[in-house]
Length: 155
Image (cartoon, rainbow, N blue to C red; front, side, top):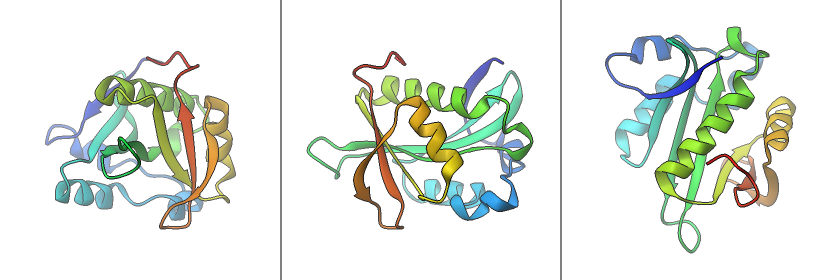
């Protein structure tokens, strides 16, 4: 496994749009099309593909929200591994790679994400990597998790 992160543009958008979660996961995350539309309307969003060599295996969308908290918050807002690549270590390794990317890009030592409390697989993955619930609930009813990078060595 040799994971990299690539920005999404005309050269790879078609292969990214082919990535799909299973039917049972569809209600946990917006479609990639919806994410790309949202990102096209707001320049703070970054959309990326997660690749193993030259094969697109996942998608993510993240941003820095300067209007949140004292100095803003970095959100790993959307993350998915396509169904045919799930259960092979791409989720854990992809999140770790994204955390490194977010730290290198923004320099913040806390990363936020939100998750539906019935999404037990995602919660287990996020906790394994070092995210913990902080007691907040977002506008969609998802519980907020935060990772403090101070003791971690992702960057």
